[in-house]
Length: 224
Image (cartoon, rainbow, N blue to C red; front, side, top):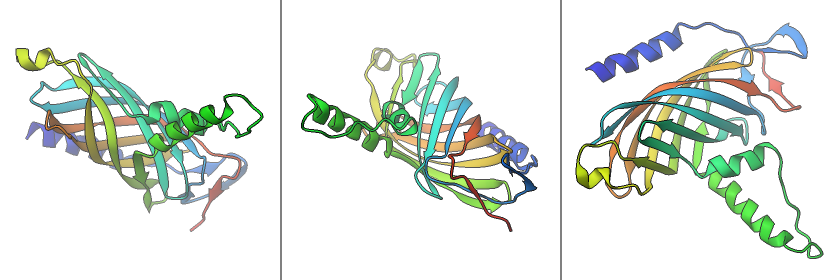
């Protein structure tokens, strides 16, 4: 019951916020935002983690998102708490996409092919955490997401058998995020379910991401 009250409080607070997205290059009031490829957001997060058989823990994190179309985005995050951390492979590959690092292929450049393959692999791994975005009002959207390769380490249990386990475990994650836009700022409460492929642990995480939105130079808006 306590967990349900916390979840309800977060979503009710976010639903009560009111904001309107505007384009800095166009002073007129614009309504529904339409994402474009290469739009980027960066957020800081506060998270409560409930993972059986471990104790609940509060953790802080960093989240990055890059849109690859009007509705789809590649996401990645890094969350750290006491005796806990998790991240996805995209924490390495997504910055390459964001900053446009695209090593070219040339048989005349020594080692360029190997660098190209490494970069291509990192970028492909970024797609393991993908979100779909659909608007529900002028400045609000729901974003269901899945992550297939979250790497997580938990060693906070009192059980000696689990406490000595320092290995990274691979998790599947499915969740839902509510994004509210206030100009370029974003407030995003979320709830997710995660389960280890090995059956090592499972549970729920919830929290709030607070971040900033960086549109690309072809930023588009749609008026109602």
